[in-house]
Image (cartoon, rainbow, N blue to C red):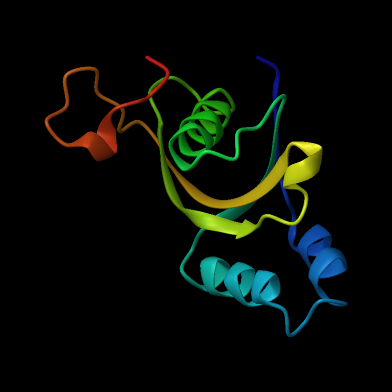
Length: 113
């Protein structure tokens, strides 16, 4: 499966959401950023509409974009308007150096391992 992850800069976010200022997408994006999350455009070939597969596909794509000793914490999907094009915007944090192969807490386990 082919993955692509692009973390958006403030300028890119402003350009995308300025014209959508009162939309739910813009409000979710703003809330996520205020909580310290980054926003990524995740492209997954054949992105599933099934909730379980969608979560798995997005998480694996994000994990492929960070070092193996980091783990991803997903806050939520902020913009699903391009799902038909296999693209989704997601709010996430990289927890650097916190991945553990034998962690007792699922927040510190990588799905792709």
